[in-house]
Amino acid sequence: MKARIYTTENSFVADGKASYNRPKNVLHVRTNTEIPNWGEEYLVHYTDDSQGLYDLRCKYLSSDRELKEYICEFQVIEVLKYVQRRKDVKVKTNISVNIVLLNMDERVRINPATQKSIQIRAYIRDISAGGVLLGTDTPLDEGQKFIFPFDKGTAPVLITCQALREHPVFEREFRYGCVFVNISQAKEAVIREYVFRMQLAVKNKARDDRDV
Image (cartoon, rainbow, N blue to C red; front, side, top):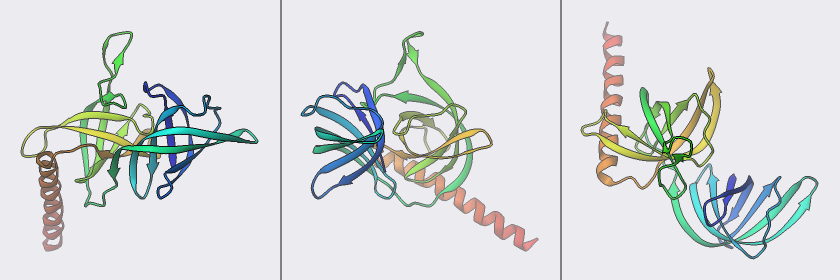
């Protein structure tokens, strides 16, 4: 489990291993960075590989030093967002897309040098109704949000995603398991139709190969 800590103005502070005691609303984070200002509020993006993604508003209670690490305790004041990890049928793909990076508040990130949006060439390596496996030549931060156009379904849709976990590098390609964020029923229906169609095509091809 991991956490990335931000100020309430969305400036990155630290990251590290974390554990979230949901019944007690307490979050513990091990980090190499000393976090100042006990008693202040922070925004925390917490990743649970089995449950999903949490965006939390927390009060920083205390920290203890253990060798080179700081063990920080946060009181969870509010769960701002929760994206459940879904277990859906996946189909392999090789779809090229341009992803546009977003800030944590889902506004488009702007390159200060060019004053344009930050876009990265990427490839959808598999897709389900819950998310995608994304490959890029450029590394992404865990928890990075982005949007991309998907035009392979019955209608073109704009999808918002978030990098949930990093996969091992494959043939010099950075790969990330990503979940869809705030996806509408209409957009999810487009994705599900595409997944079903691709799954059916794979089954038909396997049947045809057996009949040869």
